[in-house]
Amino acid sequence: AFLVRLCGPTTALRLAGTCEALTQALPWRIVEEVCYILPEPEEESSQPWLDSGALGSAVKHLPEVRPDPRLLDCLCRMCTASSPCISLRALDEMCWLLVQGAESRPADLWARAMRQPSAAALLERMAPGIPSQIVSRTQEDLYHAIFGSSLPAVLRCLEAGVALDSEGPQLF
Image 1: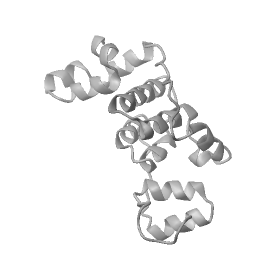
Image 2: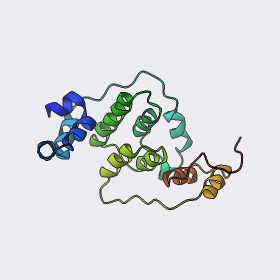
Image 3: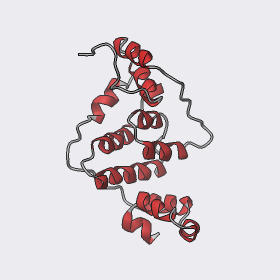
Image 4: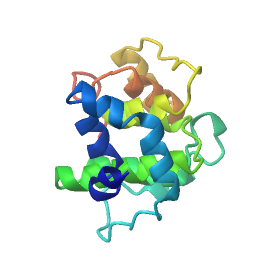
């Protein structure tokens, strides 16, 4: 419990994975229990490049892709973090929010679309028994989604790993 309080849940779990003795001494259940009693993490004072409020507003009428706004904020901070430490703090906050009951779906879709595999793995872990449904998409699907102004379709293409930097029609 002291280790989780000292270095945060993410680092504690990484340390626990380094050897079998630590894995047994610090299982997920302990991390979850400590996160439940820890105070809410302090929010970063810097303004991220990605505006989670604007993204959330863009999908407020689309429940299939509307994530918990606090989780979306953590993801935006992870994407724009200027250092690994800031990204780790956002992941720790996400862990705390999930333990406190934040709904992990569809934030996992956003995490994969934003190329944040650690966050996606954490979010999937908190939604056991609900497999992610990633469907193969092509570059052409992405362009159709963009030109059709379909944010859910764009997210699903990005989630499937379609690259934004490949040849195609000029977007601007």
